[in-house]
Length: 73
Image (tube, rainbow, N blue to C red; front, side, top):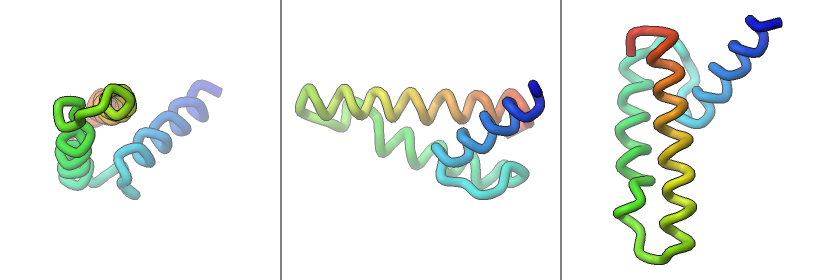
């Protein structure tokens, strides 16, 4: 059961990073860099936008950390 849960977490992390293949470390890193730049809270002006951006930024960094932990990315 833990394996299914962890596979689900990997799939979710790949979806957050908009990457299809968990084995493509270069694509994962490139997507991570693109998305943290896109969602960095300092790029947004309004408070609501900053909050949304901070949530997205956190999701992206958490997804990358999970994938990095499971594999050398």
